[in-house]
Image 1 (spheres, one colour):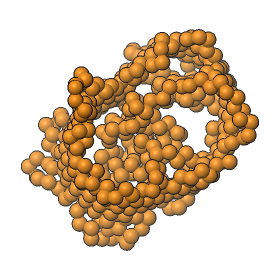
Image 2 (image 1 turned 90 degrees about the vertical axis):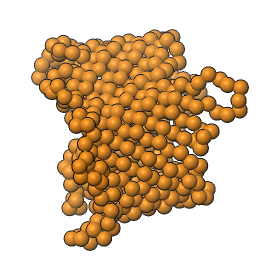
Image 3 (image 1 turned 90 degrees about the horizontal axis):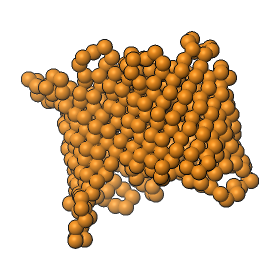
Image 4 (image 1 turned 60 degrees about the vertical axis):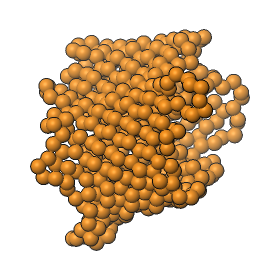
Length: 462
């Protein structure tokens, strides 16, 4: 993905899901422009969003931008339900076309998809060609098969073949056969609604994989998260991935007040010099022996809904004894019509926080539909003082959840006459049509106001 093409994006889509995501394209560009994430990290998150892997994109956002991601919240977790009712025979679905343009206005990438749901079948044609059959907890897939279809905790390469899963009682078995003779066998057991374990075996011996390989993985899910260990014969250590989280209220008290809650989240990847052949990890994770973050927080709803949070992220490159450690602390408090927050980030703990970022902010929901916000983010360098602040002011109108328009004015260097940005967002979702528009315009002393990046998404259901 070229840097210019990522920075200047135009997307045209038919029936792109319009539900508010934990991480959006606008978030990624904002973090990039503010210097919170690097261009490479932005590209990794955007690629995952394009593929529809919101969970992994959310995980990257938690580590790179140190932002709380709702996709990993226990409240967002959903159990797979068993449907026994006869599904409708009327076909439903959508058509999807997605085009990305580079900074010169030329098409950099495009994505097309037709999806039709009929009875217990789902047909996808276009970028992903897949026929799926589901009946209660049973599944069968034929075509392009990857992470979602195989219920893998670790992202996988896309394979072309057939896969099936069949449950009996608390047990289930599954298998995959790829056109290049890659095979997978899987067996699992569900202890209760929240706890399960799977053992997975992989084998491959032909093109496009140069070497014969055997690998096995153990994947477990708990009410507090997931953990996976995947080992391929010949590797020094297995590939490990953990995502743990918990919210712990104190003991019940004889008081009408809501309790103060405490929560924590741990996310991490660990691997040696190589990873299993079929694992498809972001480049920064591949280059890092240890990659992850730890977040702890507390919320006191009865005290003006006060929230305090601390985050530490660590990235330890391969073949290096040193690790990059960044810490972030945040506190936010106040009623809806006047909430104030302060965020402090130590950019590198190894150099004793020589550089730190400070961001006071204020938001006000002054009516049921209108809200406004303002922030100033400045970098402090020891011995040099504060640099010019990044100033932002926004105004937002929301009709119903998911339908809103927002305009944000940004002065990246503190002086609007020197550098200035306008970021616009508009999102609408109806029963048959959804529209989402995000655009950014920039100007500086040398260049007049011009479009910098943007996206257009349109959803049409049938």
